[in-house]
Image (tube, rainbow, N blue to C red; front, side, top):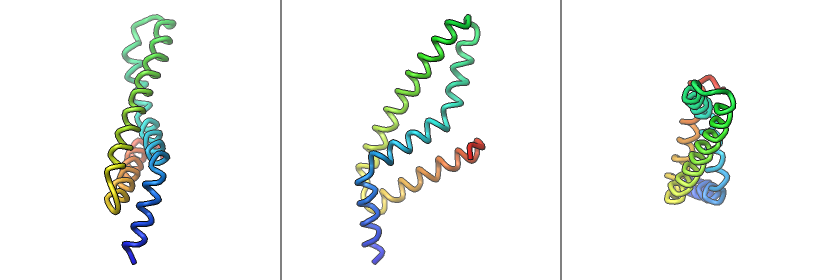
Length: 108
């Protein structure tokens, strides 16, 4: 009985892997975003305002875009190799880990 429900849940998760990976990526970027932008601000602080503004936009776009692409593809590859209970546990563990980080940073 338990195996039947586990199989149904794992099949549902594997069918919706794109959305799951996208949501995990979005939450991870939301949690890490303030730290990355503060590091970029420290890096561009000694320059004039126009150069600082341009660098900030370019670096944020490049860094956040690169990290989101790498994280999404990595998660999709990793989750795609899992099946059954392992897939369910990995996805649940990822969401719980992100929730713990968000709680620690007082995001929730």
